[in-house]
Length: 93
Picture 1: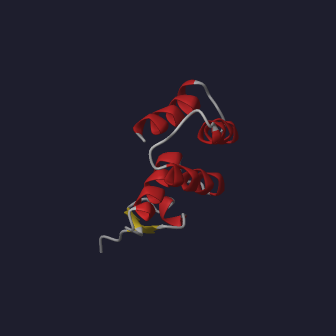
Picture 2: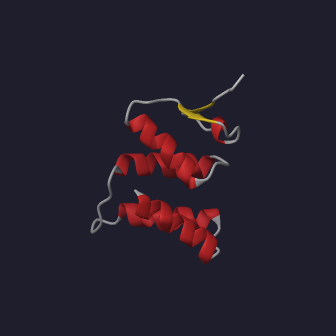
Picture 3: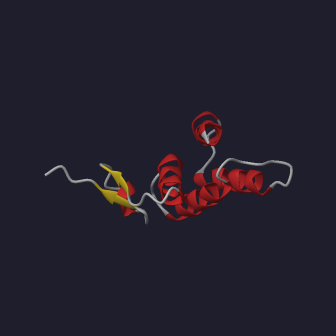
């Protein structure tokens, strides 16, 4: 999981990939028969959420992993993340 998060960050921050390019690379990797990934279903869900949301990939992956664990919603202080299905803003007052 952490390698996938790091890969997404490196593609974006170091290589300047746009969101659509990151999505293409990750989708291709996830569909490669030669590779296997921990929590593949959560990764697929995270890609779907990321494709359709303004939240970053890490937030989408955390939402997907919470759902996989049966622990929804993912509570967050970030109002933009709370707009993603499966997340909810945590109000302090």
